[in-house]
Structures are given as structure tokens and as C-alpha cells.
Image (cartoon, rainbow, N blue to C red):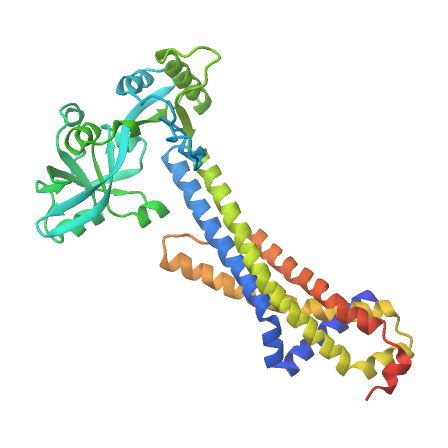
Length: 410
């Protein structure tokens, strides 16, 4: 009996949609918008997360960073700078870490921005990764032209720089940049190479990047040493946990910390970036769900309206069905199924639109947006539940109708 009621309710709902196309479209519009929004946002969040995980895997998931403070835990407070009283990371500490059995190598680094000029061409804010020699051990990338900086360049604080392919094109156009001198914050630097980072969402969004010896950034650009950190590459024969334990022990010993003292430095695993991203996107996703819920509420009001109209238009039919023996439960089920069918149709249209938006984002932006299967299931369930909730009052009203009064209705 219930299966036949489901089939009959679905057929009647589809007939109502066909018979009143404009009214039906306005009714399910809110459902469509709500589901499409959830689908599109889920696809973009999933795409960014996939990109982060793949890049972390390619760059070495066991690698980690030692810094003055954990920027993943920074909170806006009035208690001074985020590093508190932590002393600066020293180069000698990086060299000591590099000698540990569980560590393959270390790369000292400072990140900053600078103004790049060549002739009349001026770029006011270019990202500079000031690094040790051997930076490609930690950061995926390849030299396209020229050569990488040498350990001698780092020791001598040589004013040399490598430009990303896009940055070289922005500054020099079709000219060969190798051997040319540009100015960074007014100081002359010689271009020794052109590089390209591996394909990922961040490299795609930030195309103008320069790499130089960290010593040159300190000497010629007055880079703040308080921002200095150490990129640690774990030995292939060791685990990340072993390397981190050895690094913490070495740092605490060099800094003279007692057993009960807290670390006055931070060790950040690459996985923490994913954890921070998940926290951020979790809040963002909740906000988007709240906004899409408004659209679902609007759609739900429309469902109530169209189902109330359907109940009124079919009053005599309800009276006849009750006179022939239909129970209140059967009438209730019929109208609930009709309401669910209306919202599920809206959900399916929303799925198509949301999936199309995800495909458009994936093809036109660096974000590899993809719709997770869980989002599809959740969207359809959300549409079905909306149909049940908003269809309950009209269905209950139809089920409670007096058959004698219904048969008299004209």
C-alpha cells in the first residue's frame, strides 16, 4: 500500500508541476538556490583542500618548519606581538639542526615584500622568498634558465636574484632577463636565473615571486631577522616524529631551557596548514549553510503555498477518496510525498546548477573544484527533509478534512 502511495503521490506532484509551470518554478526557486549554493561551495572547498594535500604530499609530508612562533595559532589580542618574549631564531641553531641524524638538510628563510623596478617598469609589491642555497629540497620548483644561487652567494651576501617566469615577463617582456640588473627597494640586484614553481593553487594565484640569498635580503634590503625561520627536511631513514623530537631537544639545550620551561620557539608540521584550513573553511561553510537556509526557507514558504492551493483545488477528490475508504494516514502520506517530490525536483535542478558552477570554476580558475559525493547526498536529503517539514501542515489539513464537507465543496 505504501509503495503505491509513493508512486501515486509522485505522479500527482509531477502533474501539478507540469500543469502550473510558472507557479511551480517560483515555488522551487528557493530550493534550487539553496542546494546550488551548498554544492558550489562544497566543490570549491574540496578543490582547495585537494590541492593543499597534493602539494604537501609532493613537497614531502615529513618536512616541517621551525619558527619564532606558531602562526597557525595566532589570535588577535592586546597582549603584544604574537611571538611574545620568544627570542629570534638564530642561523647557528639552523646549522646545529642540520647535523642531527634524523635531518637531511635545513634551509634558512625569511619572507618579505619588495618594490621591483627595471627602467620604466615598476612592480610595487613582489613576494620575496629569501632562502639558503638548496631551497628546492623543500619547495618544489625547477630552474628554467640561468642557474640557481650557490652556497658562495649566500656566504658573500651577493645581490643576486631568481625570478619566477611570470615576474620575468612582467619586468622584461620579451627581453632575456639573465645578467640584467634591476632594483629592489632601490638596491641593485643581478638576475641569475628564471624558475617555475610546481603547479598548485597558491603558485597560480601568486605568480610574481623572487628568490634570493637570505643574507642578501638582510644586508641589502634590511630584512627583519625576527621573521627568520628554518625549513627542515627529514632524512629518508627517519620519521617526522623522530626528527621533531631531536630538533626540540637541540633547540631547548641551546637555549638553556629547564625541564619545566615551555618552548620559546615553534615547530610547525605541514599537516597543521590543512588543520588550519579545515577550521577556517568549517566556519565559512557554516555561514554559507546559514545563508542557503534562508533560500530554503523562502522555498519552503512557496511549498506550503502551492500545497495549500493543491489541497483546496482537490477538496472534492479528498472527499471522494475518504468516502471510498481512504484513511487519514493515506491522505497524509499522499500530500507529504507530493511536497517531497516538489522539493527533490528543486534539489535535482540545484545539483545540476551547482555542478555546472563547480565545472566552470575548475576550468576558468586555479581551483580544482570537484563535487564530493557526500555533498550530493546531503543536498538531496536537505531537499527531501524540507519537503516533509514544509508539507506537513497542508498534508495534515487534507488528512483532517471532513469527507461530508469535502463532497459539498464546489
